[in-house]
Image (cartoon, rainbow, N blue to C red):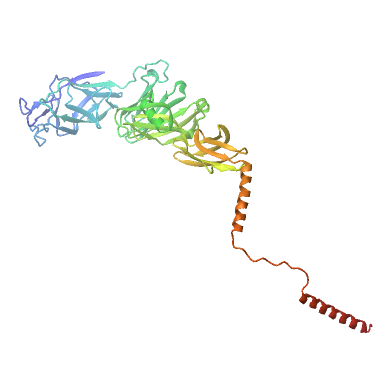
Length: 491
């Protein structure tokens, strides 16, 4: 590592209650030293220039002839972008950062501070970046910052913590193209990865091989690849297998079963989008009866849970694989979507029936879980299974079901649906039903007796005079016909 102490003669004037020995007091005061040959600073704004000794000066005071104004505002925060540039002239990639002894000043690249080894900027050979400066004068009475140090370190993989890790330091991957673009994957520990892109095309997707990173013991669930889109040319992101914890509890509340989790963080630069590629061992999927469409990935950020779009990508290297897209990094939980059933509004169609007559049992089956599923509903009469029905219910939906129940023996019967007490019905005895019929007849007879009396109807009894005269006339006519018939000659 190159570690050089740099004297940056940055001057400013503070108004208000802030007092300095002169109108152009140095904000940074410290020893002066030459930078390493591989790192150079150059002014890139009117606020910065090189003095007679080729030291970089950033002057925010009225003494700077190239700017107008009275200096940095008192009791406020001022940010100036692209004040100066850092250029790396080495032949290998390098991490560069600045440290100092005050929180009044912040150096940043692309909006991200570069003030620690963990938060650095990675530079390719002959690459330069613009450095912004933020000065915070809130509640301050001095303006001195000592021991400004520029650090540079060759971007080599760190020593791996496990000799059994597939991505130990000596096997960390690096892929370079003719334009100097490179990616590097490092495994600091067995359950973590560090992905670095160097001189990548801003806005383009860069793919990293994760090793894979096991999220469950035995490699039953792994993070295999990571594709990152960043507005920066160089950036570093980290992945670490973790216990689902609070994120897992939120997933359970959503109706799913957590399987494994990974925490993703941005160590340097920015990330605008990413695609994570996971896979599961076939034996694990078969033993758990898991269907690919029921695998889900949840993002837990700032106490809020959201479900990501998941795409099944089929078998890859003999494993069940799927991808999840995310707009940013945080904690991600791979889960198994599950239905969550409940039986509501169970009821009987009637309370009294005859032997052999059916009583219809109805119930509503709801699914408040995250996955579609089948539920076998059991109807019991006096604790004994009377019928079973299987229904399919989608998430957030309710399905109605009905089952007829028949009993031949008289008595009272209690019904329950999946343990939910539904009510009781009575089968009436056969003789009780028969007794009701005479009673109804008697009532009918009584009603007839009480009705107004009608005149009696005379019954027919023998021939009257008119009938006799008619018969005699008919016989006379018949006799005349017979006489005429005899007198008529035959042919």
